[in-house]
Image (cartoon, rainbow, N blue to C red; front, top):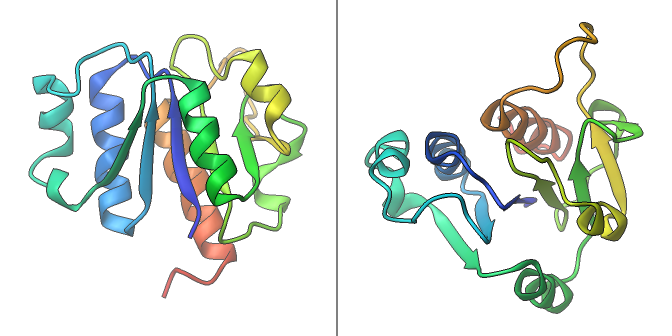
Length: 153
């Protein structure tokens, strides 16, 4: 099953909401530091409600630490970014894919984008809207990957 990776997330409630989505779907969640909050942050815990015990959470202090885990496990890195060239809905996902999302303020760092096998975008009609909320983007990307792989039943 694809895994969700948040690179340098900054806003605790977004990460909490994403953790809740990952708990509901049985999806492993990787947090790559530095984080804009402490893991024990009350807003993070509040957004995840009482579902934290169901979250398959992995914390990596830096992108290099995450890269070591990725190299060990294998799979493609799929970056979700407003600069992506591939429409997320027109893509053939694999069980071993890693869905990468950047911080709310900066997006994915350039060095992460360069390392991605493919960069996806979620199309938006209004050009004056820079991006969707991070937790919304993760839900869209994750559920499309799950749908295309036959996990929604």
